[in-house]
Image (tube, rainbow, N blue to C red; front, side, top):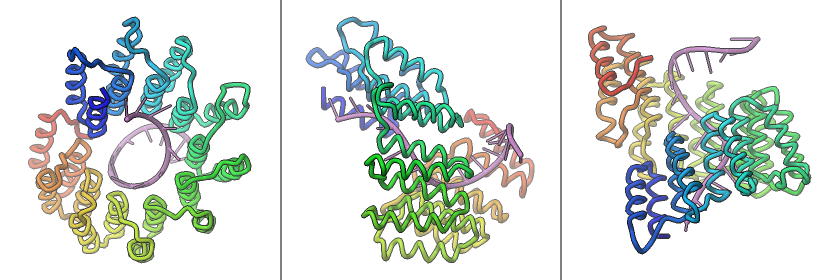
Length: 360
RNA sequence: UUACAUGGCUUCAUAA
């Protein structure tokens, strides 16, 4: 079973749900081995990630109906709770928690963390605070907040520029409680301060991070780069980028490249933007993804270079295995509408319709 | 062998 599960998990994480489901039916028909709770959990996870929560719920039903077979565990329910929360369906998530309690399965810290995050993402900070408060009282839900819970709350507060003071309080509170902020916690807070325009404090946090033996990572630098670009400090951004490679010895990832490319396009530095995109394409550690293409295509369009944009649009799949999605079509369509013959745009719309995409 | 937190784009909506 373990072998089957490992395969299914890998398939799910690769987005190959259909194949994972095939392996699952094969496993069901197999006379020697049968699916266990791990098999169900990883499939349910895969289905949730690909927005197929209905099907995930069907699998849960299957587990609950068939007596004496495979019983859902904390993981099963928590995965579903997380799936619903990420989709903004907090009520459904709560219903799942209700179900698990009925089945005598105790929600654990991960279950609550998902719910906390769900509230935060859904702009229900008040609810998140309430739950977090409950978690802090040892008698109530039976699990105290951990580093992740704090990071989630800090992120929630940071969504609102006016609340980063509160975020900072939480940061000190966790240290007081003996929890060590990790790089995610730092990055979250640094991003919050940068977004609020409090760059000095952000820099102090970076320093504090180093002092505590947490070296800034790719995400930390991406955050700094992004805010430098947004403030039109492209030269500084480029200098920092070079230092990231030479001094910090970090390998830029797609997101970091994309941040820079976007910043360069938006600053009108056409040649530098092109050059950075070529660098990305030549870097064997990274591959441009759909977001990168959207950035470059919209950058080209913004500067009237629609033909070049269209060329890239048509070649991206062959070059990087990146299939244009609806957003990508819309970006090139906007370029056409602005710069080209309406008939060409019309043709594009028809192509979109054939693919089931709608123009916005 | 399975679940939970941080960084990238476009449009739109909301908020102001």
